[in-house]
Image (tube, rainbow, N blue to C red; front, top):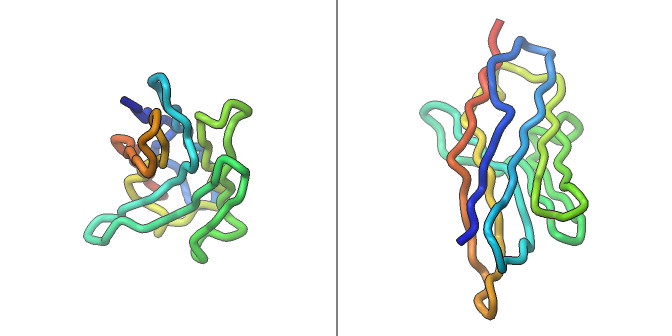
Length: 120
């Protein structure tokens, strides 16, 4: 089993920065991609950014140039650097991972979510 544990959420003022982290734990798995999604109150969950094990990144148009996704050398921790935060960035941010386990491919797991509130 793979588990994702997120950290780094909190309350910030508009214009400030925040860094989210998500660590995958377990054994015998291989991460193929990780990403961040968010769900604002009353809205559907939406993609924020993804990164493959090869380092390819993809961003939602709304966060391009503002957020940066990266991983550590072991590729089992993903970060989301969020700059110039706006009130509309307020949401629960969820970590997601695609992985394979043994001969089983196309598995996925979600983190529990971390709340980011941008307010003055």
